[in-house]
Amino acid sequence: MSDLTAVIGIFDSHTGAEAALKELRDSGFDMRHLSIVGKDYQTEEHVVGFYNVADRVTFWGKRGAFWGGLVGLLFGSALFVVPGLGPVMVFGPLVGWIVGALESAVVGGGLSALGAGLYSIGIPRDSVLRYETAIRAAQFLVIAHGPATEIDLARIVLETTPSARVEVHRT
Picture 1 (cartoon, rainbow, N blue to C red):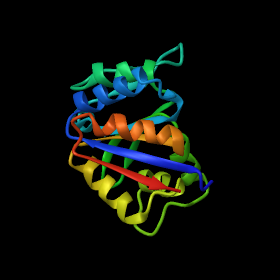
Picture 2: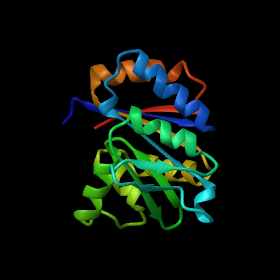
Picture 3: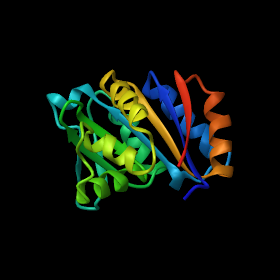
Picture 4: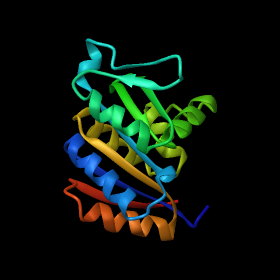
């Protein structure tokens, strides 16, 4: 697993995160290795999505078009209600990492379910806490995970987008 890395971009707006995802797609990055995490403040008062008969997630609310658009770009989605963070939308392989962390009882030691999912893929605890703080502050995380050669491409693309911060983690 030492040849795997993760690069995480923190974006102040959903439009910046969405633009980064599109840039990564257009650069040829494998979309199966991308995740995005964010909040929608409307969810505390209104449902933000549901599964319909065709097992497709349908969204509405303040950022419904944004979340709905990600269904076609990324693989896997979930809405987690995380104590201390509130409702958090997650798209991509991070959904499975969070569920796996929950199933193996990794959650603990002050980490939320989101934090446990990040920690389980090798993100250091101090970085996990910064990412949880970013989500709490209504920022968005774009996470690319995979072999070092792919992550180098993701890092270059993310560094050219208007992100607040880009960090690389070697696992």
